[in-house]
Each structure stands twice: as C-alpha cells, then as structure tokens.
Image (cartoon, rainbow, N blue to C red; front, side, top):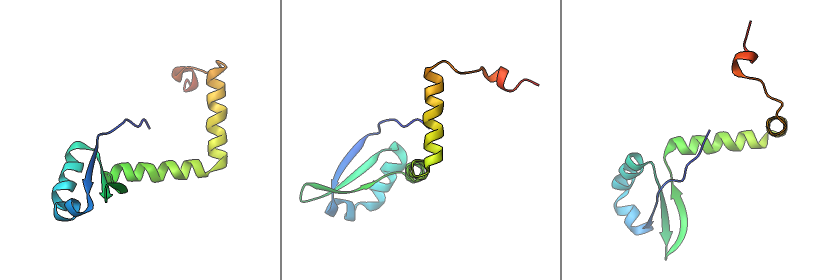
Amino acid sequence: MMMTMKSEEYISVSAAKSQLLEVLRRIEERHGNVVITKNGSPKAVLIPYADFEGLLETIDILADSPTVEGIRKGLKDIKAGRVVSLEEAFKD
C-alpha cells in the first residue's frame, strides 16, 4: 500500500462544532485531513475512514514480529538481486 501526502486543513474546535457536516463533506470530497485546534494548538485530526482502516492494518502488521522480519528479509533479497520474475514464479 502506497501512502501519499494529503492536504491538511486546520479548523478551530468551535468552527468544527458548528460546521461538522460541512467538514465531513470536505473530507469525503478532497480525501484530506482536518486538524482541529483549541486555542491555536492541534488537538485532534479527522481523516477519511478508509485511511483510518489503513492505519489500523499497518499497526497490526507492524505489531507482528514474524511478518516484519519476513518483510525485512524480502527487502534484503531484492537488494541482493535474489528475485524471480512473476512468470517464472507461477509457471507450471
């Protein structure tokens, strides 16, 4: 999964409270993040639900030591040129 930088919008907690439906609409349309501030300081972030699910999946993967070790080993194999083509891997 490739993550790209998304636009961030900053909004005060009072504005977020009074404009919540509009803020949610903007998140859906722009696929961006909204940082909610209190007294000018960031306190929370609203993100698209699909991004949230992706973050949870990433956390699960990174919490699984055997999976992370397998990824590291695979990256070392790629770097060392120990690879086969897709066709070669799945030929009869």
